[in-house]
Length: 353
Image (cartoon, rainbow, N blue to C red; front, side):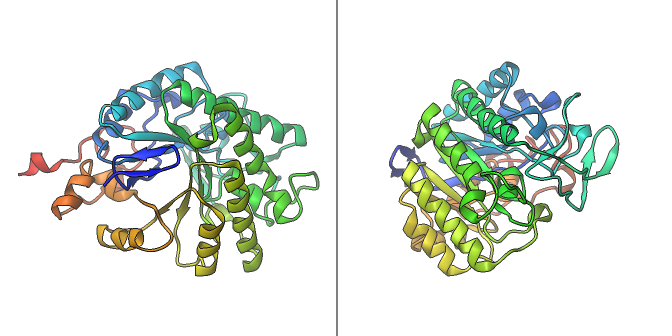
C-alpha cells in the first residue's frame, strides 16, 4: 500500500534501514554497492549506510564519503539503480567523531570530538589491526561551525548525486549524539550547557541543510536512552526533555521524518511526546519481524517500519513478506568484509524455487 505524507511519496510502508557494510574501497561508492542497493529496491524507502560528510568523519574502514566529486559520481550509480525500481533513497550522513581511528582517516586528518574525552573501546583498522580509541581533538567553536558547513556541502552533493534526501545520523554514539550527551559534551561555548544548548549543533545543521536543499529532503535518526559508543546514561527526565525539544524544533523546521532506533529502554511517555510534538513521518526500527511491524503500523506511533538485517540477507524482503516465505539468515562473518560474498550473493526467491 502506498504511503504519502507531505512531500514523502513512497510505493509502500517498508524501509531499508541504514547498515554499515564497509565495501567502499578508498571511501568511494562503487558498482558492487550499486548492485547491492538496486537488488533491494522493493523497499519504498532505502536509507544508505553511514556516509561521512567530511574526511575526518571516516572513522571505520572502507565506509563511503559524500564530500568529493569522485564520491558524488560513484553514488550516482546507486541512486540510478534504486530509482529504476521506483524506490526512494536517502543517504545517511554519519560523522563518527571520537568513535574512530586515525588509521581509518585520510593522511593529514585527526580524530575530533565534541570534547577531548576518550571513548572506552577499540576500532578495527585494515592497516594496523585493532586499535584503542584515541583521545580526540576537541573542536573549537569555529571548528564546530566548519563541521556544520561540511554537512551542508555534503547535502548539496547528495542532491547532485541523485538522492531524494539525507538522513542525519544523530544516534549510536556518533558525533551529533556526542553533542547531546552531557557526559561527553563539557563545552562552555554556545554548544554546551543545558539540553537546549547541547541540541544547537544538530538544529543548526538541520536548519542550514533545509535552506540549502529543502526541508522536505531531511530525515534524522535518534536512539533515545542509548549508551552506544561509550555514552554514559544521564538523568531520565533530561533525556526525555531533550528529545521532545528536538522533535518540537525539527517540526518547526519542517523536516520529512524522524527515524527512531527503538529500544525497550525508551519510556512510552517519551515516544508519545515525540509523536505529539512532530507532525511529519515517524519511522520505527530495530528488532522488528513482519508480524510485529504490522502491529507497529496499526498503533499510534509509527508511520513506516524499517528492517536492517532482514534486508541485508533478503534482497526481495518485500516479496517474502507478501508470500509469508522463509527468510535467509545473515552471515555475520561477512558483514564488513570487502568482497561480494555475504553482500550481493544472497538468493532471491526465484533462485530457490
